[in-house]
Each structure stands twice: as C-alpha cells, then as structure tokens.
Length: 109
Image (cartoon, rainbow, N blue to C red; front, side):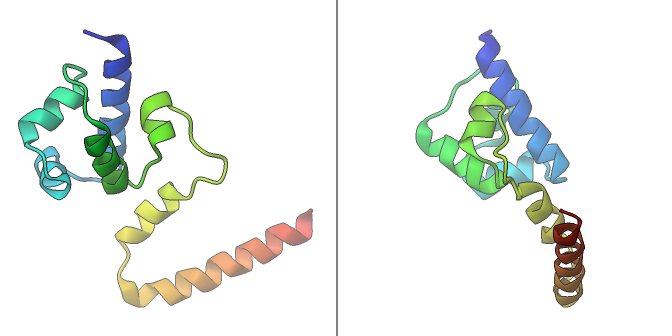
C-alpha cells in the first residue's frame, strides 16, 4: 500500500470522525459508495480531483490539509464544524460572545 494514500485516507477519516459523521452518511453526502470511501480512508484507492473536491467540501477542509496535512493559518473549519451542530436560535448569542472575545483579545496586543 502507498504510504501517501494511507496518510490522505487517515486525514479524511479523522476529519469525518471529528464531525461525527458515519461513513455511510458521508458517502451519501458526497455521492460515492461507502465501499469506495472505505477504500480511500484505508489508503487502498486513490481518487479523482472531482472526488477530492467533493470530500473537501463535505468536510469543510482544504485540499492542502487533506493532501499534505497542513492547516492554513486562518483555518476556521473547526469553528464552522462546531457551529453546524448549534441550534440556530443560539447563533446570535454566540456571535456576540465571539465579538466580545475578539475585542478583549485585540486590546491585549
């Protein structure tokens, strides 16, 4: 098995697990079979750029992270993933808390 494919598959599975999405759910979201997704995650199969794009979109992850393991400096995907599970009625309150926190942190500089 190709070591690079194993690393890519591991990062995809980790992101998917972090989001709490089953393999079956995620494969349905991105339009591939659960078996093909399992092969990608285990490093047994590669994927087309089209499939990579669907995976990145579905995981809210950059291709740079999936392919190379590098997070971008201004990566907000973790926050976005957390907010996906919040009841929409609480989002205005969370927004105010975040704004206040940013204001406090900017004054410390």
